[in-house]
Length: 58
Image 1: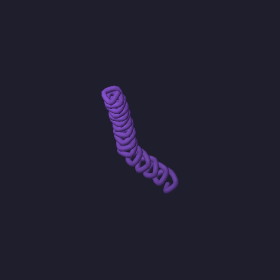
Image 2: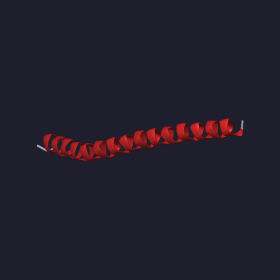
Image 3: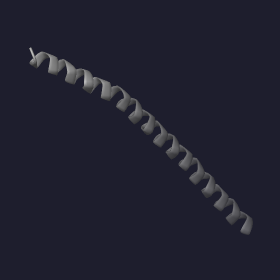
Image 4: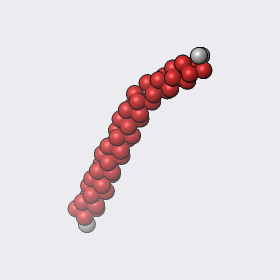
């Protein structure tokens, strides 16, 4: 009986471990996407601002 309980505990821990790895992967992907988005967004806003500034200062 104790072997069965031990196996059940190991199985639950393994599932939690796999879930935490999956969660870590998701967080990593979101972080990378946010960093990439920021890297693209800042120059885009600057270019847009400069273009508008140039248009309105004729």
